[in-house]
Length: 447
Image (tube, rainbow, N blue to C red; front, top):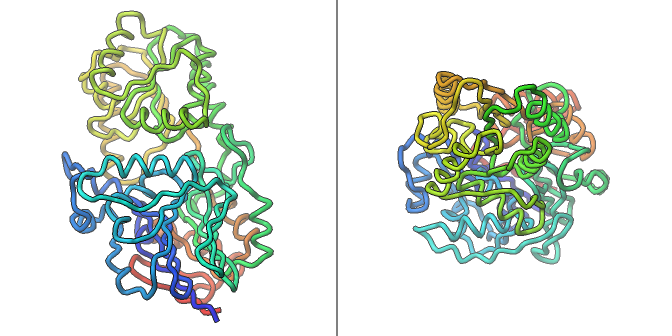
């Protein structure tokens, strides 16, 4: 008999700080170790890299992994599904507590390495093992980990399948069933169907957009939306600024391509732009035209803005950070008049991103847009498609995998409820085959 436990460490009561432990008898595999950004932003000037993990746990910024002391077994591996901070951001604070390697796809592994290098408080010595999507890692004779290619709003994202003697446990957080991605390949549907046939004991699945009806539009749609907004105008000589997620490499690639069609020089600005995009370029995930300019440091950014103002805004397309109105990000500084770039009447500001649904972010974004409008900017909002599955994608995955048990994760109680209702439509029974877990709880499954 194999004893399986699913431990909800973080991300089950909220969006962010995702961490789940999957126990197979005495072996434990931790999947994801994330940060909750809005809890950090409440505190002005917090330098996370110098803070102690217990302080951050108290703030609710990282998972409370002290519950792992009560779990019988030994952590054999830490696996990360992709490189977003709500999945890798707590690694510099928590990973050193476990004598286990950290596993991720090559791009994710590179971002984890950067996270660890900027840490000032703890020395993280865990070995980092990059494994391509489709690859496996052996824990022991009976247990192995498989990475299965999916699509999300960052490149090189995967599902994690933990293979046990009695079937697989599938961790399916952060995905969309995008059959026409603009970068990378479509999800590995063939392997997912096979896995469903082989037998999945339990699927842990994100519930972020489970309450949104229909299917998530493909990234190809976002590419067309960006193109439509940037090229679909007779006023082609006005200033234009685009803001999007620095980690959304496919989106940035689209914006750079459209800049070429417009005859403008794309200028990437912001520390995180520098980090995510340059890493992707150096690893060969994207090719840039020769005229792309990238600036990460504040003084270089201001110098570039000065040049744009003197040579003419119509020659450049700045692609900047700050779409959530984060204090100190480039767009917030532009709106406050803290850069040489002057927003004038008729200039276009294009938000190729959604607002993260937390009250603080919504307030920051409202303030940002108001400041920009006061300067005469035209706002183009929500030129974006989500990286998360909507209800019908969830239905499709559930039918494809057909797990014995299903656990919604990666969301608040409202999102979990929407997922559970959908699962009940598929014949699952709450408390029997579909389970609502809260942070700190363990679900036992005996097979």
